[in-house]
Length: 139
Image 1 (cartoon, rainbow, N blue to C red):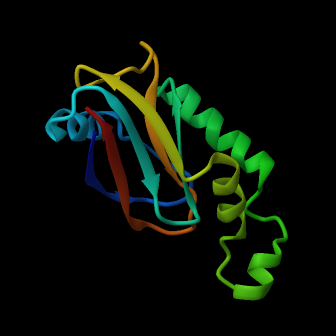
Image 2 (image 1 turned 90 degrees about the horizontal axis):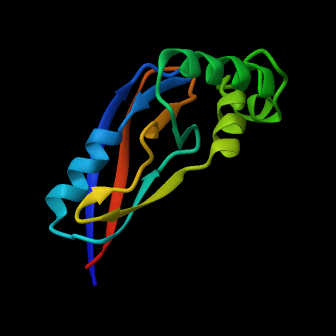
């Protein structure tokens, strides 16, 4: 059993910026030397999240629209009352999505569906430098 860790660095725009990171995760797996196993992608931060979707402009807009309905930017958040940083909505949105995602791979290829890509969403209210950890476990 091998464990290999890789990092993916991102410069985001914030404001529910959706970034397809599939190729970077696939590259990390390919370069790891591990043939079969699982890759876990993790963001260390409380205003970003990871999931899989069919990454296309319509769905990207749908996600932005519905996250705004679930946790509107202009809502009242106790977090903002305490910290005065205006990103309470970002924390709520990220908590619904979650900070990690695991994808199996065989023969060093991610086992994603035809229309399935890995995306990172930065919900924060400002541009950020983000780092995703890809931890690869397997044989």
